[in-house]
Length: 349
Figure 1 (cartoon, helix red, strand yellow):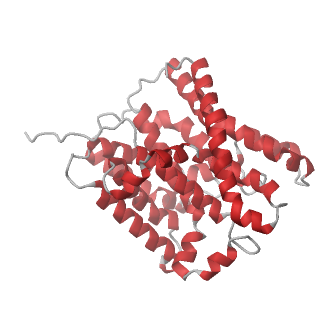
Figure 2 (figure 1 turned 180 degrees about the vertical axis):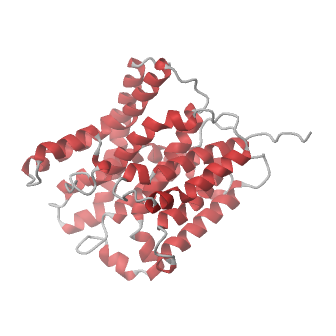
Figure 3 (figure 1 turned 120 degrees about the vertical axis):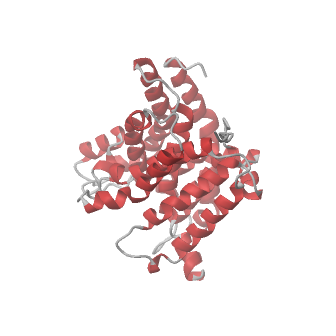
């Protein structure tokens, strides 16, 4: 009988936390390019492939979904689900996202009051209950557009205990089969007539891939192939796919092509070797990564106020201001609220 390889087991994956900062930054930059936006001249000055990458920040969102699946699988993959564990899990998920999200709504509240969008009550209800992503075709209010992804996250949180039941003990065969299913799931759903406007269902493939990556990380033999080769391949392939997306088959989405590349990226970075992983694991970048949720969900509400600034102020200081505010929010609201709410639910830590 062959010896079972030693699995890679790390309680904390700092490089993935540092990566979150750059993903959030990419999303913010994406919202600052386009006709009349402050970074559009910069985008137009770049070669075509780099311009496509600069405009492609929306592609960071599926990577966030994959990260979510990976982290949840590593945190809760061995949990025995019962009423108590489900309660703690549910409160922990709400504590993770809702306090800062509520702050984002408060920041933009004056504009919601003045907005002509109707029916106002229904739109506000969609915001408060995080159901936006289920009504994309009808939901047109842009009060905090990135929040559609939180709507997806809430769906993923609900189905995660079902997806992960029996996951412990899975070997390479079922892990690779899950990854293969995740690669094609979105295209299968579209083939069966599922609307692209049902964002939580369409993006379930990214979350599922994250769960598969978490198991692959547990199974990966130490020393078999350094992570730097995996994330190097993921970064290079993703850059080429985004930069030259016009040459891809139109019937297959860019996110479908990127899904296995993102899996390589996350799996490789989780192993922690190579200079990129080590740089992302430094204390400043890990801290910024922890504050990146605030960057992501607060930058549009802040932009509602920043549009009244002088153009040079927006161009030169808006991103820095968002980062600074997010760091303050993380230290004085997000993390304390998270700990407090989890403690109320009976978490020991």
